[in-house]
Image (cartoon, one colour):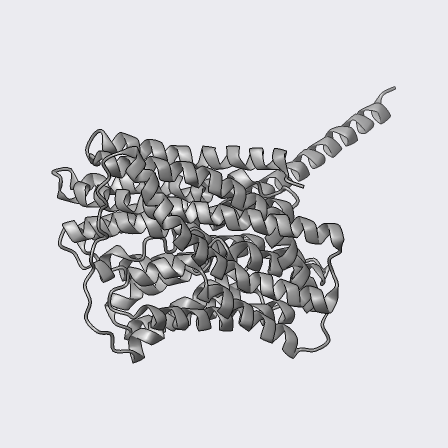
Length: 510
């Protein structure tokens, strides 16, 4: 049970996702943003690990994480003890977030807040909002109403929070929904909704990720209001002196045990919960348990390789490219290059692969992976381009956040609810390891070189534009279907008139 053919297919998909961003960096490195040979070799080694790691991870998510999440979701919805789903959701949100690798990376890059304080604050926020998301599904509250209320509260708190906390708060909402969290929580929502078997069950399959992303935003804003951070400054990561390819290989070998331990800590809470679940419910049988075990092994090895590749190979390259472009005569080129990188880099996010596949399956193919992926790429490209413009000009993030979220929330009342759920889930999914280890260092390098404020200018990379582009996809789909129906009615009426006229002519004939 090694799934050789599916693994080849997943590896080919990951190769097609990683190649564009690798090509962009190579072109930049020999033109306007030269890299040292050592940094370039690390980047290329990292790209190879990305391809292999993403292939293993996405296959593991398909055969282990998704069945586990769906099974737990179904059993929770069947439970006659109302406190049990609440307890399980809170514990899940808390434990998974505490171990989320992306959050560890973000905490390291926020100099003014102690790591443990930030991580605990965000974890509690995710736990509370996963409970609220589960209650929303049970009470059948429309997602658009829940999102409107939550984001209204977000902007009220943002008005009282220090400026330095606001971009980091929105980034924390994205990074907490990382590669471990997304497949499991999405599958949990699908399992919980499937039990209802009503017309809105498919719609309510999405939305858990979006509400879980709001919890960290609120909690970090509250942290900014009540917590007095010590002053801190951003220290760029030290660039390793790589002379030979053996030095590069040794750099990855030294980092591998650390990420192996980090991912093990991330996966163990889910494995422990699954074992408890299986002990009490006996839902899965022999062959299914073997399949899930193999899938967990693939997930673990894949994520270790992926995180080692992006952290060792991509972080320094992003930092150097950002600072080089900001100091050059062509600093304005940061905007289009940022947009181009954003368009392609989101395709290499492991959780995005899982989301687009789940969307196509739940919608029975009516919403294709290609359409969602293209809309998400456009949204991230716009986000990164706007962020680079903000770094160059120093414009407040509020000039983008307020109109952007106002438009995205307004669209929720005009597009099918399933697109609202997908759009707001995508906003969280788009901010993953590739964002924290390449896009964020790119922005921080540019900001530091240009003399900007790291906390207010560099953070908030991927905020709200994916919410708009995916809902616009839903709006265009709705308008197209209406036009097709109107055309069908007009054709039917014209056929009837012609048929009626022919009958009249035959009746009048001698």
